[in-house]
Image 1 (cartoon, helix red, strand yellow):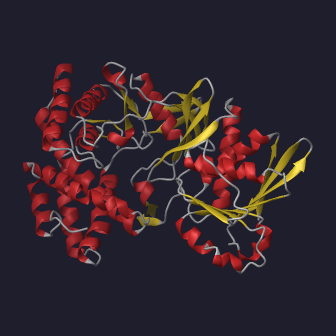
Image 2: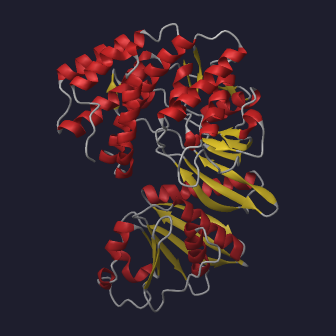
Image 3: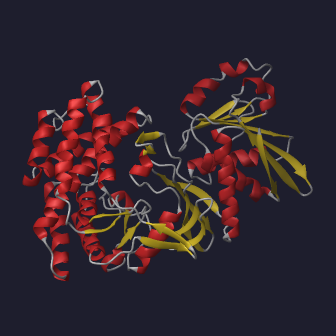
Length: 501
């Protein structure tokens, strides 16, 4: 069983420990709080629950008499007090297993039911030491590892002069990365980025994992290098205030939280057009494929090569086709699919290649209406950038995977991009529009597969609601004459038909 210790000089330090553990909490976790009366268990529990609720004033009464108090927070948490339990068997009567099925459990006086607690329980013991407390954390498994990493993030903040900052969950994404808002009185809030090194999966082709073939960023070094290159080129990206490349921690400027959608979730056309103009500016620049993250540390930006394009497109036949048909894609379908895609990708040869951010869409662009020009757009989540077709990011923007973009707004976005490219000099619009259709078809084929995979493999069914939109985007892309063969193949196999969810 692994363990670590932290000295808590006062009540504020105990509360910060509660915040740190809260940031690591996931459904199914069990936290066992041990300590004598007055050791600080209640202070830690209150801070943890308030951090999950993002409500510093939330009333958190002791569950001494109710035995359990439940809170519908970001991760639902159930606060148990087992002091009055006469035997471990009574834990079932309190609905302990049910609580873990829908959230996490915070258990005081766990000694009363120690044998009934799961193996992955994280134990936190508070003991008096001098004028303060010593917190002893122990456990094994994913929950303890997350808690230990969260405490390492607090240590990182301390080295950056932000050791006393409050921490609140900001956003997570489909990867292992997560982001928090950290705040200190009198200073603008900042973003704490937690980017653990990518865990490569099993080999899927030619002895290589999917992430290697698709050139997914494997460490935070990629983000730092690309962020610095974009900043030097006049793109508004977060300033990096502190970095730990080895552990994968960054302290970043907070660019804001306003996005590209109106109050009712509708896309704001002017903002998409402005983002198209920003891409046009970026695509008029020359980019090196070697970028510096720190003195002597470089990131080599990978190419969006045919192997990467095809393995991404294959997500459609690997996941989406089996959902439609109830069985894996057959050899004939796979061979025809690859044949058609290879013919289409041949047409990309000779098109403009540039720095391609890969996920240039509304979740990763901040709107800053108080600024002017390109500075109105703050760009985040840049670590997976490649050297690839310039048209790809335009397709990512104008066919936003999580927002329904009408053909009219798509056209306005494209027109803004094209007008800006023309104004800057010679521009082959016909070649661009063909590359746009090809990359849009590739991207949306990939996304159909990813969204099904998120449901089937990762237990995230809420992504399926996006499938009708992605199919519509795919039909739009395949309408280009250069993709007629691919369109006919998709149509012949029912890949463009609307399906009930």
